[in-house]
Length: 490
Image (cartoon, rainbow, N blue to C red; front, side, top):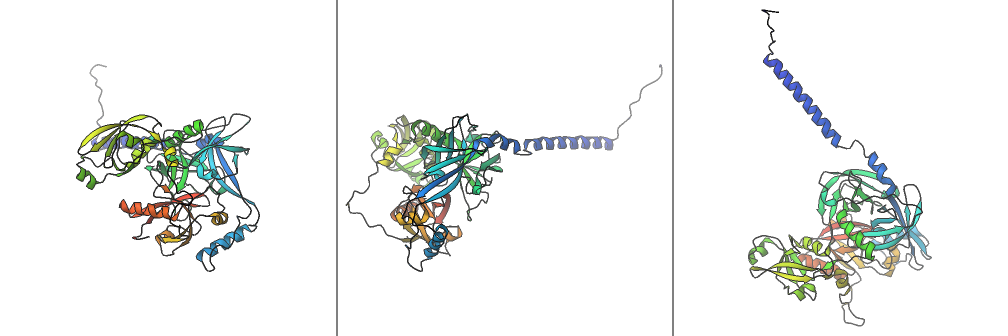
């Protein structure tokens, strides 16, 4: 209509502020909803998806006649109570008996390859695999790798088996959700959830690359899988740190990128074949770097070059290895892993720092397993110092493992180590849960089979300026790592 106009109502500033606050509130609600969607409301779908490929493992070992308990310690010894309890539990020690153990594993192919920990099946006479369906099959050992504690088994089934695949452990981030599955304390097919607490953990092995998680891992979980949210295996549950022997939220799973390389070799060769450079090395410290004129505190300082590939290539003690096969070397651990992951027989270029200059050497790698097997041992009748029957150190009384002790602890003939016969109640070892009957199998990243081995590892740690040494201790076959302070004298 002519002469008429349309008026637009005015909005007060207070009303505009109210509208703005309402819009902001709605945006925050939507954002929170999106964040909530990123979190799993349940792990049920994941558990349903992977459970058919996770297995319980039961092993049994026949302990021969004559290996039963017998009074082998002096009357009044603190170790006497341990053996009395053991004898009372096992009774008929004069005849053969069967010892059983439990663990976990998972199927990685439809034709029946199964992955578990080496310590789960070590020295076993019989291995039974139980599937989620309740079916049981006998497994054979294809190959084992004690250095990473990985074993590959094989079962024969009438039909294709459900299996899971490996994921890329290098993409796992601290804070990612993970789920562990296995046979904790014999409960069978139990799931626990948590997050990735840390990555690239090194415990005591040369090739360690552990994912740390707070997902509950207990005895019997060993060898079981650690899954990401895509139902991929990113770790093999192997060990825990605990003063009590139970889960306190610090568990370790060997990273899948280490496991897959081991599994591939076990499938192809039935054993591992790692590259070998042939040097003894130590980390470069700030003092060493300054004294040598290095611009960066990195690399691996060569302390000795025995006969081997490096010696043939002209490497010398005092060289600092800065790069290996085109990859920068940050420290000794990194170099050892790089060399071990490189193909045996490959010619690689190694850059070293020597007398203020860098130079490149061409080294053809040998095989570590052959080199370790070639270490000379004392010949029969040779003059060797007599091994003490017992020794006290670090608050522990230890004895070499012999046939009698094997019988007392139900250990196979191929198991080596040192038996803890007593622990000082006031020592740090006691506070950290070490007890009589524990078996020390490694110290300072190396196996120990005698008291002199342990003394050597302690001396090496002192020379390297360390105040403690990491021990791998097994109790009922389950591994646990304990760091103990080094005394000023053994």
